[in-house]
Image (cartoon, rainbow, N blue to C red; front, side, top):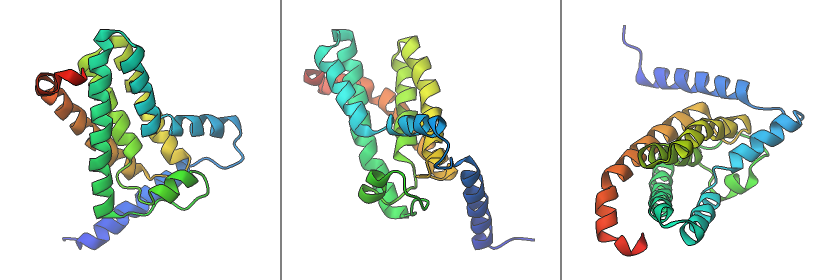
Length: 187
């Protein structure tokens, strides 16, 4: 028997909604909620762009190229995720927390934070050093799950965002030689 596609999608969305709600933190969870909020914000693109700009300005020459590649990735990926969100237009989960996200970007699919962190983790693995890769491989899922815990994303948003980020990170690593050659003045 073949189920209609609409029924399959509705069933998957229901499971996604229920699983996401189970992870969501109550507003009275105190320090656990504050820590989740910190993690959820730590994946913000402005945070990464400021940090990477400081590394590019103040860091050693070996970190200049890393910082610039990561910044190009963050900027380019933001445009890709925005385009996908504009096409899909899935509303964020209902809630109060994250007004800045809800007001500036009311769409949740895919998660830009999960995409960004997935891409950064892949770039860190490909570029090194090892301590940086380990840090981002551990930090990426923590940020992504915190977004669900704080109620601004569903688990499927996180999964899709992570996959987009992994693809973007892999593409950036493949394009690295071309970027270094043609845009050497940035590095």
